[in-house]
Length: 571
Ligand SMILES: [Zn+2]
Image (cartoon, rainbow, N blue to C red; front, side, top):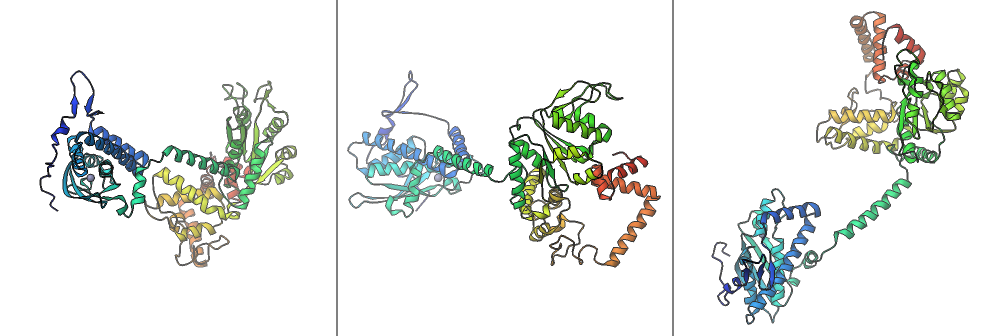
């Protein structure tokens, strides 16, 4: 085969006759070819259209689309030449059809080989195509690598040959200018001689995408229903039995207005459950207001929750609605409700019983319709015993308690949570990792998680930042302060650090303690200064949550507050 010979001319019929079929009249806007109206359009626009087809429908669908377009064009061209050269042989007609391609500007065809024997149903052709318009489009599609790309030409020549030679013929593109070959090479055979005939033929059948979309939509809504029926509650995630129990209780509470009391350690996801209850309720289009009672100074808690009238106290320069009024018709979430002052407890009780309140310094009674969800990580009953919490309010709040288990009691949920937080922070920090290493996952699964889900989230976020883009997050990224021995399990199944991990023995322990004390005395100085540093450190670690900081140091909140005041530390 010589790719560089001049294209052969068909001498048996006067192809120039075809040219005479094209008419473009001065007074008429239409272009005609024989009896068919034609259209002259810009190739670059067609290239844009083709690119959009590939990007929106996918390669296979776009390919089928253009092959069918070509197939249809080939049938029309077969009709044109048949009408023009009534006495010509099928072979001559086919050649005339190829010439027509050149005249229409789509491609210049060079015949390498053409064998036909209609009686024996034999057909074999090799055609070299120069200046294919489709190859040119592919090259201008920049970066879209689609393999041999002269789809419409393939369809066109296949249908031209099939229509003129009386049997189904399929052409395939063996080499393509669009893939950096010097020209496009087409090979044609009777359809049944191609082994992959069946899969190839599917391109010629249009399968309406709309039906596929409707079907997918149906599947999606079935799956969605399944998800809603099953155990999910907003962003509170899991699959363990403990998780499912919480979901069921929360969903049952959603339908009514019952006050809910969420119990559980710090960081178990009480606010997520509260939000889930709100979102599942009929109040979901109204506000959800979350208040951490421990984060508001006791002297301000009443005005913050129930509002204040101008002049009620020094500094109350204008009237202001409280959080309850702002949550009107919605839900209020009172976290660490145990921190409410006695007066605030009394007002809350009245809101729950009478659905009304008065702003601080106001005599006007206002109606409020708010669902109350309270939460605590301390025993309210104990607080009642100690006289810190009103018994009547406790009973009012405890109508519908939901106990949220700590993370160590629902370890099955850890992998799910890990992948959720990874996804969240990967997109937040625009980092893509390969997930957790096996050792890291083992460590995460065995750790006790005193800070529960919140701690897990923080550790995943930190690990992601420490790991580089595209790498696996290993245990050292998650727990940088741990001395990790890659050959052994880092944390025992009970969640404690193994003895041969972390500070490795008593001597080291002792040294560590001594150096720490030494540093405290030499660097910080007086007892008062040391205390101040410790209190501040606890506040920082508890993210300004005073109750939490007090707990860390084994103190009651009043004791802790007293020490803060004594040392003039502001939170
Ligand atoms: Zn090509």
